[in-house]
Image (cartoon, rainbow, N blue to C red; front, side, top):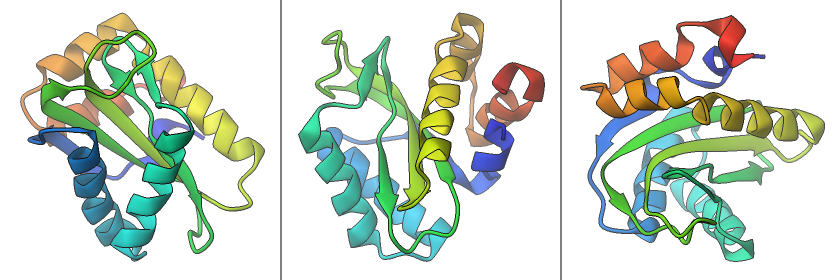
Length: 153
């Protein structure tokens, strides 16, 4: 599975204007609900509950909010580039401007963990990250994230 399998063009938000972590998760839940057909509130609560366990901000301005949803049929991703960085309680204390949200079916197990690892690898690639941060709009970001399946695998 590659990022292309997790993302659809309409699951890329760039740039998204928010003022904080909670608002970012709310906006993401709205879009994820439209993409999955699941209730917005369920998605928001799942993401918020995971953040309460510890921040998904992994450093270098990147966060990977994730959660498992009983009603979800398959792994789904959503990419967000924020208009301006926000405090996300990241491990390195730096604000976050790049988010990849991963939603998984409750029984996804190892697939969920493999997808998280793959997303982290792609986003830790300095040249990819630079290009994403420089991209003008969502379609350009989507093209970058899905252009080279071998690199994203």
